[in-house]
Length: 441
Ligand code: SAH
Ligand code: F3S
Image (cartoon, rainbow, N blue to C red; front, top):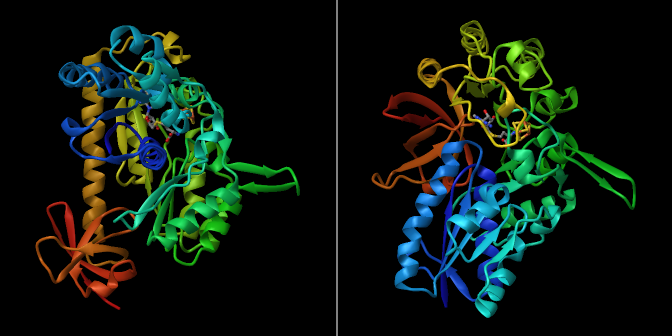
């Protein structure tokens, strides 16, 4: 039996894709997953190209695997993911020992590509954007986890001027809602209690059933999923402020299973920069969305992504970003230095901010964001949190470990029959990065 080793970089969607890769290979070719790359017959790299740094890692990694291949030429090296879509020719010329180059939407072709490579010894390349076909894989949910990702839509029709994703993942495609429901029901049968719906822009999910003219929007999909009894919690990433309609906001009134945590990237606090990024909203519109959500769910925590040093960002623009962080009081957010991506509109803009200045701004913002997180942590002490109980504590047999709706780890005394359930926990203390608490019901 062949052994496969999969290395995954980047976002949650890549993780889900890797999970599907493992499933399809274990099903279609006689192989088993291994965590030891030195023992593998097939090495698979699922790459990310969102920023230049992620992309540069590829050739370093391939250099290490080249040594293994020299020792054992029968090893198959396959490169997939966003860099493969974007740099197919470069991979081929810089690393000719690579056997297979597959794309973000050709993972279902991998068994055939491995077969062909073995048969005729030519490098096998297919990075076509084939859309929905990749999802026709019956995934097996033999997982120890209680949480799982599921892609509901892929690709993006927006053209944020900094972003490479529309090139690497193609135009928006939404999976048929019936397939999504079926897959989640399958997950539920296998003890999954919490799901995270994935998409570059989940709130523009739209599926039209041509036979009965039924149109499924994102909020309709959320309602359907919430009816699956065994699923206790629903999360989603990523949403776009432009498409965060009142219909979606109102789902927070009607669906208690939707967590009190929302990742809604604003990117910048300056309207001038948002316009240059072609985000399609301004700071005022963003604030309005948050106000409406907080009216329905006063305990909602909001997190965001920020791009620092976008071409044209003055100190004044940067301070506007700092201002919005305090106004919204973000929890658990991410920030990145702007990275110039090939063939994007922003790559042609004049960028005269020095790297040193960008680093200074990033350092400042990350300090503020870290402080915000600490403030939220402190505020959580003494409150009652809804916690999904995941497992027993590895060191202390009487303790259990769970997660809050805003992704904090909590441990507490409890019986193992609570595993898989949502319990109310009173937070008593913070210890390092974890919280201690007590079950109160
Ligand atoms: N809606 C998308 C967001 C994609 S990337 C999704 O979740 O799939 C995640 C974050 O990376 C973005 O919100 C943005 O803050 C950051 N990002 C994207 N392109 C970038 C670039 N060229 N430079 C720096 N950061 C970038
Ligand atoms: Fe990228 Fe903007 Fe789409 S960040 S994924 S182009 S919404």
